[in-house]
Image (cartoon, rainbow, N blue to C red; front, side, top):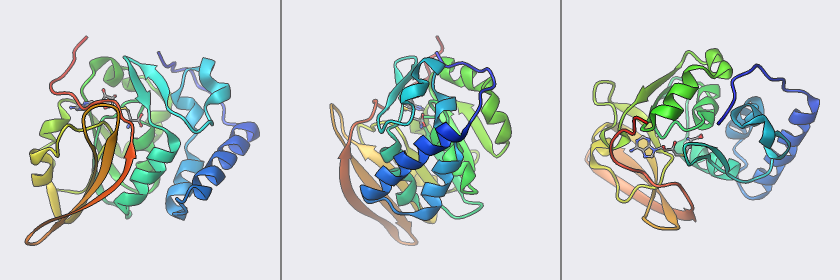
Length: 221
Ligand code: SAH
């Protein structure tokens, strides 16, 4: 499991982070706002100290409860697709380690993030770094339902593999709003970007990724 002791972010971490971001940029995500936000968030804080030396490799890692912190390239890719503007109201499905939520918050978004696993939700209540982010509101719940009480949202990001496009989330999107969601069961999911217009939705079908599955219901233990 992750640990909550205060940790440092020194020049070695920053140097490794810069190298990782150069790699992401070379792979095609050159969006400065996204890269700057990822430079500001110390990714190693989200991992157990045992993984710290490899925190800046471009790969996913276990965060406990059989879940992973997304691959940095995937975070950059999804965040870029969202076209975040300051003060955007963003719904995230799958808080996990809260890394993605912090990147969004650094870009000026007001983040509403849902996690279905109580263990991960509870862990984040004690996670020291999140105390710097009062603009991130976290919820224990089922992401398939979204947060109707807080809708509509400017942007919605699903960070687990959805078996289909969740209808209730589409309904919670503002006109002009964007939802980014990996869709597919099994090994691979295909990234979809859906834009809501005054008179309906349009959809772009993009690259394939590998996500942990989006599951129904709340897991309390
Ligand atoms: N955004 C996370 C990625 C975590 S992996 C990060 O930055 O670390 C995806 C997460 O989605 C897991 O924690 C998993 O428990 C959660 N999840 C899966 N199905 C869900 C659902 N229906 N509602 C909310 N969270 C869900």
